[in-house]
Amino acid sequence: MDGGGFVFIEIVIFAMIAAFLVYRLRSVLGRRTGEERQRPNPYTPPVRPQQNGPQPNGPDNVVPLPDRVRPIDGAPADAGEPLSLAASLAQIRSADPSFDEKIFIQGASAAFTMVVEAFAKADTATLRPLLSDDVYDNFAGAIRERQNAGETLETRIDRIRDADVVEARLDGRTAFLTVKFVSDQMNVTRDRNGAVAEGDADKVVEVTDIWTFARNIRSRDPNWLLVETRVPS
Image 1 (cartoon, helix red, strand yellow):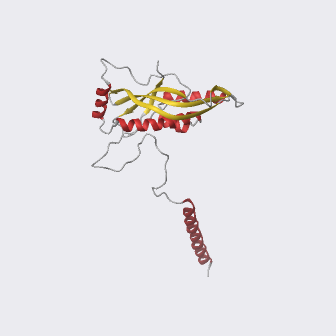
Image 2 (cartoon, rainbow, N blue to C red):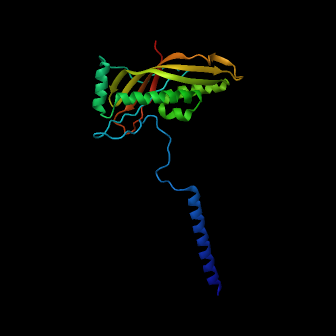
């Protein structure tokens, strides 16, 4: 057999080896089937079986933190005589038929616990998609200060006593909802030596937080962002 024949055989052999390696690589790495688990989105309510036609879909979230940050200007001031809470909610429902107050509160309560725990654990990756830029900067700044001081925060929410929408308004395409949370919490801050600097690990206290969330009702993104935090005056 001449030299050209040997070259041809070598090419065939290399091609077979390459095909085998590709097959093995795909078997090790696997293929995306669409069934892979994704990180849960706290803003999205659980999917329920459909009953008698389409069901309302209203994802939401809320969050209170042990260390209070100063309020920010998340929602513009009302112009003219404000509507009552019932009228404002009706206005939002009219503009966004998918909005459901009960589902909003359920999502907000679930997010409440998740964000409180994320703040205590300094988990900024969890906090980032739930907060507006300004609020996230405030929270991240508080976490950095705690870390620079060598402090750690322990938080436990025993229960959420109440979660109620206390204010609502529609400003153009943006809906603002303010939720009042009353919860029983244990919060302890420890110094770099592990000694208790603030709080009591054996004491649960009642904490009230007021949070304002905003969402563009024309957007396909169902997420509500936390745009303001405050405590009762």
